[in-house]
Each structure stands twice: as C-alpha cells, then as structure tokens.
Length: 347
Ligand code: DNO
Image 1 (cartoon, rainbow, N blue to C red):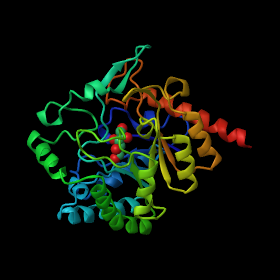
Image 2 (cartoon, helix red, strand yellow; image 1 turned 90 degrees about the horizontal axis):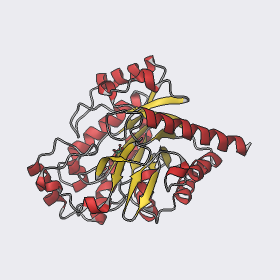
Image 3 (cartoon, protein in one colour; image 1 turned 90 degrees about the vertical axis):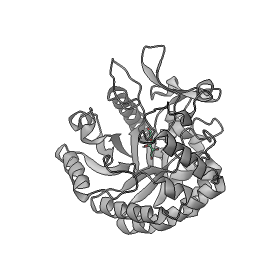
Image 4 (tube, protein in one colour; image 1 turned 135 degrees about the vertical axis):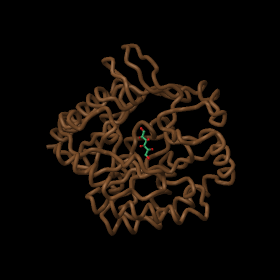
C-alpha cells in the first residue's frame, strides 16, 4: 500500500516541506486547479506540479480529481467535446507518470455536509451531516456554500441544472456513465492509468438528484459497465460507511481480490440516525471497522494508493474544512501503524 496525502497545489497553506515529513509518505494527491471543468490541462502546469513534488522527494502518481463536466453526466450532445478533453487529460497525465485518477459521477454536488465545524467532546471540530439540518437546506435559494461545492455556480445556473437533471434517473445516469467509460477506459489502458471512481458522499440521493455509487449492488453494476482492470474504485470508507447496510470489510475484500481497488480513502465516522459525524481516524472514535478494513487489504497484498481522508481541526488549526495538516497526519500515522502491524502478524 502506498501512502499519499492530498495537496491543493501551490496555493495550499500546507507545504510539501511539511507533507514530506509525515512518515512513509510516498506521493501527493493533487490536481491542476485553475482550469475550468471540461478543459484540457496545460502540459506545463502538470509538469510544474510534478517537479515541485519531485524536488521534495515525493511522487505525483495520483490525481484527485479530473472533474467530469455536468454535460457528460446529463448526457447532452455537447458531452462528446468534453469527453475528448478528458481523454487528452488522461494522455497528458499518463505521460507525466500519473497512475491513478480519482473522479466522481455525482450530479451537481460533490460531498455534502450540513455543518463544517461541529465541536466535539475534546474541543476539536469536524464536519457533520445531520438529517434535521439537511431538511432545512435549499441549494436553489443561493445561500449555500460548502467546501465540496463548485462555488462558481450562480443561482440561475443551478436552477437550469436542476431542470436538466429532471429527466435523469438512476438508469439514465448509469447509461451516461457507461458512455463516458467506454470512451475513456481504452485511453487509460493505453497510457497505464487507472480510473478510480469516488463513491457518492453521502451514499443516497440529495436534493432530489440521483446518486448511484452507493452500495455493493450498484458498484457491481458499475464495474461491469466496462469490465477492464483500469475501470476501478476509490474505496472511500467514510462515504460508503455512512450507510449502515454497507458491509465494508466484505466489500473491500471482494473488490481488492478482483484487483479493482486503486485508491483507498480512509477515515472514520460515527453513525447517528440518518447521518454521521466525522471523527478521529482511530477505530474506537467512530463506527467504522478501520482495523478490519486494513487487515483485509494486508491479507490480500494491496499495492494501490491510500490516503488519510478528512481530518478534524485540532490544536487550534484553521483552514480548509477536512483538510488541515495535523489530524490528517495523525490519521496517516495511525493507518501506517495498523498496516505495519497487520503485515507483521501475517508473517
Ligand atoms: C472530499 C473528497 C471528494 C473527492 C471527489 C472526487 O473530501 O473525497 O471531494 O475528491 O469526490 O471526485
């Protein structure tokens, strides 16, 4: 398993100098952030990111994300031009040594939380999803701003998008995903890049928009859309784990045996009725069987990438919600410890 850390590029307040000091750090997970969704990333931007990483002894083998344009998800005729641009991005990234691209197929909204700074018993704060809060949220009234959301949307754009999605149900979304994968996976095969879809977070429909990467049945369906090893998963524990019906240890075991997990996002959440609170990564802080998951990865010789996912804000740190340095570094250290122990016990 290769340990990685998300880095938001040169504008990130967390420097590569800090990231490289986290034990066992292998690669950054980054992206070209200043190009609009659907456009081709300039080769010099990719090369610059890579050389900044290499200077610090870090690789740049994982990209999160190359975002998928909404026209592709909706299935508009204009999707073909965005798919061509996506293919070109895969080629350019593959040539630059990128091995894994994390992306998602969630309509309009990426990860969704109802509060970003819920104070916990120990004075730390973290992201939460409370059902009573989500009921009061209306994305169309223009008042919402959350870190996972594309803030460039104006109220009118959102309204239009919701109208366009009115005819897109789960089956249609699957169909559009298949169309996209059939075009991009051959390029991935040629350039040695793995596509790793990120599950929907949370794994249920929000604001009336469909969500499909939510459970074992749907992931099975997804993997068959294009049955290639390059068509795989980002197995995000906190996303899939928000639905208590998902048996994560069983799912990880199944998909790692199939060679279809390319990237692990590991974090813990505490489940509450209809929602969850993000916690420290450690097993006993939340409801996820973090140890059980890492154990099956070890037993199956997992060689893909892993990153500590969202951290809490601790020690007075402020910054991008979920993406501070300290708690994610503690998360990486915890994951390293469990991973090393699991491997030692196998010998
Ligand atoms: C949240 C992240 C997601 C993820 C995208 C991938 O913290 O895990 O925003 O990057 O869904 O496209």
